[in-house]
Every structure is written in C-alpha cells, then in structure tokens.
Length: 119
Image (cartoon, rainbow, N blue to C red; front, side, top):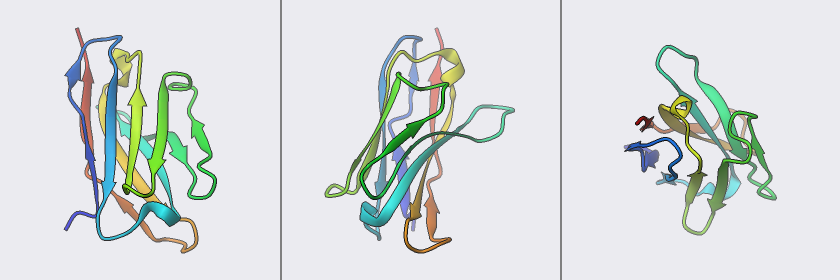
C-alpha cells in the first residue's frame, strides 16, 4: 500500500505552468512537514521546497524561488506544488516526502512523478 502518492507530472513547453499534488493515505498530514525533492537524469536528488507542519512556513531553493509555491491542505490531506515559468532544467522526477514533526524517523516517500519541460 502506497502511503504517499504524487500526481500531475507531464510534458510541457518552457514557460508553462503546472501543479503537482501529493496525497496521503493511512495517515494525516497535520503533524507532518512536507518536502519536495526532484532528481534530474544523472544528478543527485535535490531538495527544493518545504513547508512546516506548524505554521505552514515555507522555504525554497534559489533555483525555484519566485516561480514555485508549496501549499498544504490539512483537511484535504494534500500538498500542492504550483510551478510557473518552467525551464528545461526543471525536468526531473519530482518526489514528495512527509516527515513527522514529533516522532523522529517517521517519514514517508512517494514514488515520484515525471515532469518534462521541452520544446
């Protein structure tokens, strides 16, 4: 049973916009900080966006600051990643991670969703 599922990946042109979703089953997002990672072919996995469990404080890598927005819907048990002004270098498999803010080591990973930005 997959506890965390990403969706929304697709092929699109540079300059386009896309929203990815991360949905949880089995557990509630309420106590979890959510982090988005991505991994491009031949590269290491990169942490680029995060939102805290308490307060919904967001942080972004310089590479996506101002273009990407992460938001968390505790009631709906989903996290969204709005991506604007996409670039070819945004091409990657995008992963969602949920880490419990009160229990060390309790975390879940999704299997990823592919985003390809190409003309």
